[in-house]
Length: 619
Image 1: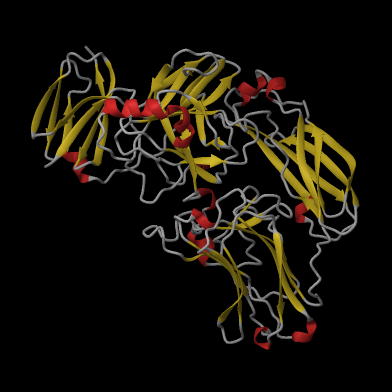
Image 2 (image 1 turned 90 degrees about the horizontal axis):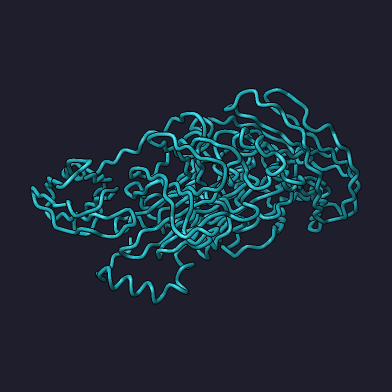
């Protein structure tokens, strides 16, 4: 929270003067300071079986998304994914950052402390029968930043190798740098200290949480004999992207909403891309098919097409989207369409795991523009005395009932557990799509963010009662009260979002289209009743020292406080201060002059936020 001593009127004048050029400066992106999607269990990380391998060693990370291959690697600290790198060699990269195997900061106390963070260690490899004359080389491709954040100069990416005496020696290092396409490193193994029966190599990144998460992406790791310094070409043809979304705009929606307008929601084509890393052009037979998973219904019979892929190039490929659907077996049933593409034949001899790509189109009880995988965080900075609002535009094709909201929060250090917000549903927002005023149809109680790994890794909030919504456009989002410690609350941002992001923000009493690429990870929940996540427990004992009653209130509001230097601020739903006063042990406010409605009572002590409570005034 940014604290200033300006009065409300001065602030409003200052804001109006600066409004033409300060609007876009109030939304920002930040590193993803936590990634619950990359979670593992403790047993998965510490109880891996050690297996001595023989040459060749190879991994392109295409066959085991989420976690490392236990037959090749010892740890599971890196995140195997298809979203954080830009133009990878093929499907799947290993991403290094400042988060541990549980998706949490390696050092949650000192944000600026550069430490050894993620590591990736090979299983032992028997090199006892080799010698320097066998020309062993270890090669790999690496990329800083990608879709994540740039490693700063103190950050670095290193390679170590284990000698016969058990010590690890550094053999290669690169400093933090701005994004560049994947580059290849080729390391000769010539020292006899490495030729033993439990040889291992280890990649490590040095990072600090506050220095951009230090994203590094690793691909195509290869160790073999009879190589040379010019052995840099890859004789492989494979996919380097999954098929694009089956839907035109949403990434997911209820099946009943899709079936109300299938032609309007379905994308015209399915797009993916093939990377020919070989030195010669290749002709491959591409097969495209689709089915519904729960029933096994064929949605697209195999379509076989010959594709010419020039040497050392990426070839985009598109197929006309299928139009077959399955009937509604239940209005609230989950339905999954799986689109699959694979290479039937190729002249090269590369790995087969990257010859297949697939995309699951999930129809469930939520509306989403994101793919469920965040790459960055999104936040607003607020002006003093002014609230912040974020709204995401959605549409319905048929009448439905809103039941709640699923939100992915970006982790922060220090913790944001004491920040508060409300969930808002608007039918219209002023200045957008011809609307002249906000039309607020629902505002929740004050909530705190939740970070426990839940279903789909989102924190689920439920509404007091269902909100009936007819077909057409509406807006769902959050409201950040002013002067209550809610500045810079992080939300997950999917930067791979294609098309418009549908996001609007309001920090200066007017709505603006977002200028940041990506989809906010806020998902309205529709249909039947949903179960909320367990509410976060606030351990601030001072909160229990303030009692506000009655609620709802009519003409007076009573405060009992045991705080030594407490302050109460009563705000309306727009975040404007109505009453600000010091707290004494017992205090009664006259509120008979205030209009009926929803207000927020914000309690602080020595300018430190303590708690807030939604107050209903009903005369």
